[in-house]
Structures are given as structure tokens and as C-alpha cells.
Amino acid sequence: MRSPSLRRLIPVALLTLFAAALRPLAAQDTTSRGVRIGLTYDPGSKPGVAVLPVTGVNGDSVRAIVQRDFDFGDRVNPIVLDATTASEASRATGPNWPLLARLGAAAAVQITPTASGFHLAVYNVATKQTALIRDYATAAAPQSRAWRAALHGIADDLEESFTGVRGIARTRIVFERGKRIWVVDSDGEGAMPVTDVGTPMSPSWGPSGRTIAYSTILPAGISALDVSSGRSRTLVSGGGVFISPVISPDGANVIYAHGVDAGVDLYTIPLSGGAARRLSVGRGSDNVSPSFSPDGRRIVFMSGRAGHPEIYTMDADGTNVDLLTPLDIGENAYRASPDWSPDGRLVAFQSQMAGTFQVLTINLRDRSLRQLTSDGRNEDPSWAPDGRHLTFVSNRSGVRQLWVLDIETGRSRQLTRGAPVRVPAWSPRLPAE
Amino acid sequence: MIRRTAVLSLAILSVAALDGCRRKVAPAPTPVATTGSNADSLAALRARQRADSIAAAERAAREAAAASDRRSAGEAAAVLAQKVYFDYDRDNLRDDARAILDAKVPILIANPSVTLAITGHTDERGTAEYNLALGQRRAAQVKRYLTSKGIEDARLSTQSMGDSQPAVQGTDESAYQQNRRAEFQPSGAQTLVAPRS
Image (tube, rainbow over all chains, first blue to last red; front, top):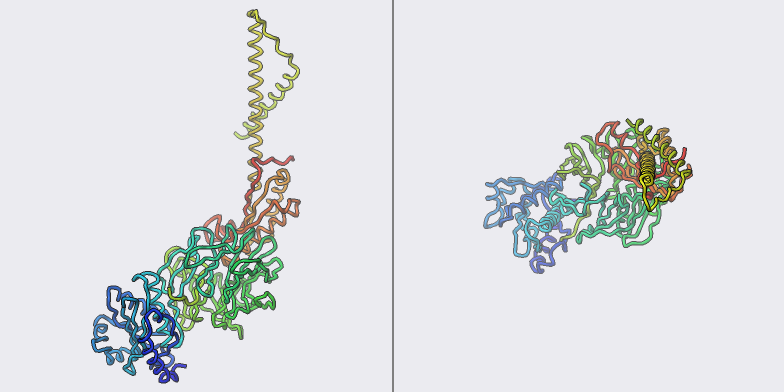
């Protein structure tokens, strides 16, 4: 995929360059995605990218945020320049090509704060040419959430233009902490509660990232939070329990678990409100934790119908139930918290192993298993929209915190700090704020 | 101490009972002569003293009976609130749980206005979502048992807190056992009546 596009795409990038120069600033953000810059780097390695020093009082923050996004994305190798090389890398006449080449940079990125946002220039070191110029409009105050989100969007655009795969920097993770729902940015910044203190549980994102569905224990029900206004509305409530709501990929319905006196089954209700309809027939067993396939046609869920928790799939209308997890893995037969990968190939879940829980994936085609964690208790996996990163809860640091794992390299990082957390859900890629 | 108090209140009760009987047969008090004599006023004083003493004994008897009611009401409330415990990842009722539930049945029958909220809880093992379902299944199992003993369905509500409200902190089996439980919250009656044995 990478090498054939190298020469072919440069003219496209240059065209974009001229087009960008002609268009008004406000129309630039996210409108012309998918521009691929053909960079020269070893196949199987990550392209080295130097982020050149940024002017202005917030320049160091801008540079640090974008470099860290490259680092956390695991697809681009940020070449961090020390103070001396940084001052030499960019000269009045333009980039210092020999120096950048010596440092192993395939590209150099120059971000300049402007009156209306950011000006971006990307240099192709091998061809010694400007490969891309774009302007990003943002009215957000420096250092604010929206300002950081704008920079994450630039980093995601850059990753896409370097590798063909859009980054996941402008995403958030929602979770429960201290009887409130919280969100945190993908880089661990900006952790904040988004509900009042109550008994909220199991938050999940709608496909647009504008709605978060969650359950409440007391009073028992399912609520939908409008992220921009911060207001919640109750979709359904009543006696018994309401558990683990998820919004369908088309944004139309919410699937959740509910039960009173005869087991817990999966139900569906329109997100806009309406009558609930039962999907699963558990005959008194527990059926919880649903997750949609990316096309919305199948649902993976956890059921105790065999006498212990296992993972099953079914059609979105509740028919064609199929046991997914082999019964002979781990011990005590406890499989839970399935999450369908965005590329549709894998289901991540937790399984009891050696008296604790570990995160595994199962391949839907051949049912091959892969254990991803082994340090401490690890549970509640949730896929990033790139299908390559997972967040999950781990007590490996002593307290239940969110961690992020790159399943390709096995690299992991701690996402949250502070009071214990649970039930994370990774957002889709989010629009500009 | 407790036994002596009980004996004492029994004694007061019997005195009061005797007094009550005597009072029924006692002649009507003699009208006090307006002219007044020492003998007359002495008789009036005695009659008044006797009436006062009867009133005091009746008051004591009422208080003792009320205390006894309160005590049995307290005992009934304690029996209703007594928790039942479960095995790991199970909702079936063990013998100890059945015995505890059996003791609640006569109290619920003697207090038909009382309703019982049954809340299922789990230990922290397992997932939060499954534990909410498991806690609900435990509460429902308890409800099913009580309805099988004749308690009306509408008087028993069920809910689950999952693992979110542990009774004790800790990560050993002793703590886990105390957390795998159903709790009971009665409501609907000012004071509970103890069942007649």
C-alpha cells in the first residue's frame, strides 16, 4: 500500500496546496481529508517525523501535544529535537534538509499559530519539497479542551497523510469514577466528570460522539447524555435492573440488559424514545454487556445460560444465537465484557485465568485466541476506532486505572491516574469542536 | 438484668390485672357530705388515694405492655431485616438462607400492610455488569421463595446493587461471603405486630 502511492500522490498533495491557498480559512478544517503524502521510509518501520519549533507563548505546548499524539498513535515515529538541533532544523530560508535527513526524518512538520487558528506546512525531506499546506480555524482559547482537540485533529490528519490510516488522537474515553461518569482525552489530559454524583454505570458512545448512553442503579434505568449541553434524559426506567446500554451503529436504537424477577435479557428501544422490545430469550439466565458488529447486523454479548458466563453472538433481532468462546480456555469458565473490533475481525473480552482476569481477543473467522495481558487483573476492554488500540481497566499499578495497549507492538501506557475507575468505552473519532 | 426486668414487668402486669378485677366489684364512691365531718373527709381522702393508686397501676401496666410490644416489634423488625447469604456466582438458597426466610414469613403474614424491598448484592469478583444481573437474580430467588410460602407478589419488590455496596471491605473469602447477600427493607407499618405463637 505504501510504496506505489509515493510518486503518484505528490501531485495530489501539491494540488491541495494551491487549493488550500485559495480557499477561505473557515472552510479548511476536516473538509479535505485523506490527502496522502508519499514519504520515503523503510517498509515495516514507522516514518520519522520531526515537529519543528513552534512560535508564540503556547508554541512548546503545541509541539508537545502533536509529538505525543504521534507517539501514542504508534504509527509515526516522532523525532524529538533537542534545543540545539531544534534551533538549527528550521532556518529563515526553510528547513535544514541535511540535518533532518541525518536525524532520520522522512517529513518535518511546521505548525504556526495564526490569528484564526493554525497554519500547517509539511515538508518531504527526501524530495526537499513542501508536501502540504493547510490552515485550521479554531476560535478556542489556547490550552482549552477545544484548542487541544483542534491540535489532536491536526495530528490525526498528519498521521493519515503519512500512513494512510487516520490517527485516534481526537477521541475520548468515557468511564465511571466515584459514582459519576467521566471523560478523558486520548492522551490522558482533560479528565473531568460529565454527570452529577449518582449511581451511573457502563457508559457508551453513540456513533457521532454526541451522545453517551449509561445505566443507573438507583433509580434503575437507562439515560442518554447530550455531550455538548451536559443534559441527561431518561430513556427507560422501572423496577429491577437496567444494565450496559450500547447505541447501534446507525444511532437509532439502544440495546441494554434488563430484568426483574425472571432473569436478565437484552432489550432494544429507540434512542428517540418509544417502546422497548425484548431481543434475547435467556429463560431466567443473565444476558448482559452487548456490543454491535460494525455493520450493526450482529451483537456479541455475555450470557450465563450455560450455567456460567460465556460469550455468544446473535443477529441484531435476537435470532441465530451462537456460542463464541471455546469452553476449555482458562478455568472456572468466566468470560465477560465482549467488545467487537471496529474492523469486524476480532472480539476483545476478559477471561478468568489463574484466579484473576486477563484481556484476550478471539478471531471471528477461525476462533483463534490471543492473550493480551498478564500483569495484574485486567478487564473491560474497549477498542479505539483504529482497531489497533484497546483501553481496559488494570490494577497493575495498585489502583484500578485505565491503560491503553497497542495490540500490534504490545506497548502499553497508563491513561488515567487518581481515584479508581471502571467500565471504559472509547469514543469514535470526534468532530472538531 | 433482662430476665429481672421481665419478671418485674410480669409482676406489675399481674398486680394491674388484679386491680382491674377488684375495681369492677368495688362499690361506687360515697358522695361527700356538704356539711363535712372528719370521718367523711378521711373516707374521701382514702377513696382518692385508692383511685390514684389504681390509675398509677393502670399506667404502669399500659407502659409495660407497650414496652413489651415495642420489644416484640423490634424483634420482628430484626427478623425481617436479617440478611441471607449466597455461594459464589450462585443464586440458589442454601439451608441457612431458607431458615432465615422461613422466620420472616409469619411476621409478613401478621403484618399484611408491610411490604419488603429485597436488594441483591455480590462480591467484587466478576464484572460490574454481570454482578448487577447476578444480584437481581438473587433478589428474585428470595422473592420466589417467599411467594411460594404465601406472601403476595405485590408486597415484595426486587432490585440489585451488584458489587457497588459491599457490606465489608476486603479481598478474602470471609469478606466476599459477607458481601454475597440479599438485604431487606420493610416499609408500610408504623409498628410491627409479632406473630402469635
